[in-house]
Image 1 (tube, helix red, strand yellow):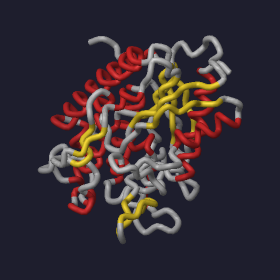
Image 2 (image 1 turned 120 degrees about the vertical axis):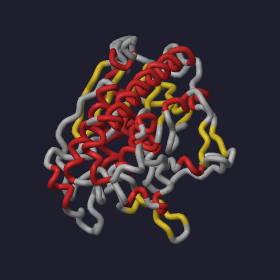
Image 3 (image 1 turned 90 degrees about the vertical axis):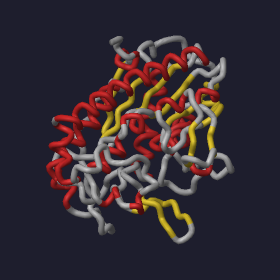
Image 4 (image 1 turned 45 degrees about the horizontal axis):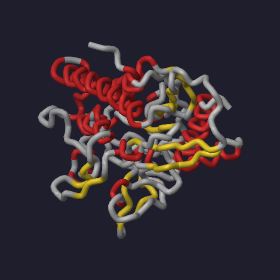
Length: 323
């Protein structure tokens, strides 16, 4: 099998309290760009800023839950403060997006025909920068979480996409499931698909925007090295950060997430965790209210995590633009 292009990208690791890694274009050193840099942001819910209110509601993209203050917006301001002005041509990040939704339409609610355009449509011939996170949904990380949690298998969490990998296997045995047999094979197959799809994504960025430098943003590490920190609720919360996922499964989930970021050519540092954390708990309420119901955050970055993402995205963009 050909080595995915993403493995040839330069890598940088940054701390998030959990962590976040950024991978920039291998040929980041080059001529300084024009005063304004045409840029496109793409990606899934981690780019969109799911769970942070208020979110953009423009009719066709309401269910993308794209925060008005997601890390692309904050990073753009941080870069402006450094004298680098991005001309943001579009932010097409959307919750639930698979890597293939870079080149295919995304159906927001199955069976409704409510679609958003393929994300590559945002690229233009003069785009110089393309930034975003993709791969977690293609891997099926929410299916992994549901395999390991009885709570998440309930109908009240149907919004979280996907079903358990094998619903006949109890959540309590998810560590064994993913370390051997069918579960391990499923993971291997999923990671192979992520690698190929990311290679396709990068090829398409080059095709539709030949001068664009791609920046793939890794996923925050959810589980600290000391898993005992996951056994008590955060201040002001009643739910455990990772709900009812068995403690013995937490290292396995951590390895899965590390492996995902490795496919994106990133390394991550140990998490700090605690009251000052940048990631909301799995079942901790987000800021999004629909009627009287507040959506769970499903382990997405909170405002603090968003700001840390934005800071490091801005720093990495500054580096690759050779300013």
